[in-house]
Length: 130
View: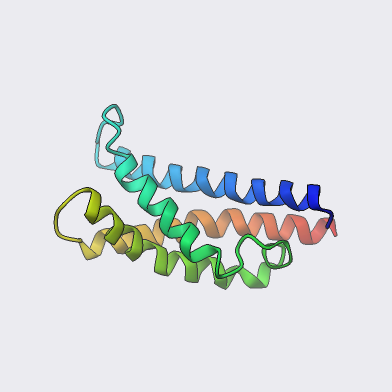
């Protein structure tokens, strides 16, 4: 893969990952009938985005060779498993209070679902194209 192509791939991965994290956040706020007007949604979005990036990068989830293989989906699920609790911890620094374990589990489940579906679609599409 040439450098311009690899940059496009990286921008695609980062961009869609950010949209998935935003969707997880906004759906969560909608489910709890919370307003988006005050920017409180950022207290979930930013910690989840930081946690995801911090876990996904070492797991190779932004490498072309890994992300185009459907059998590597375990990396996405593992990243979500660790990113959810880390995001809950980071969020607790922003919104003081107790870390609610159920919130961490919901972050794990929703992040794994959203990222898992999108990354599987990408992997199958790119494997088929090759």
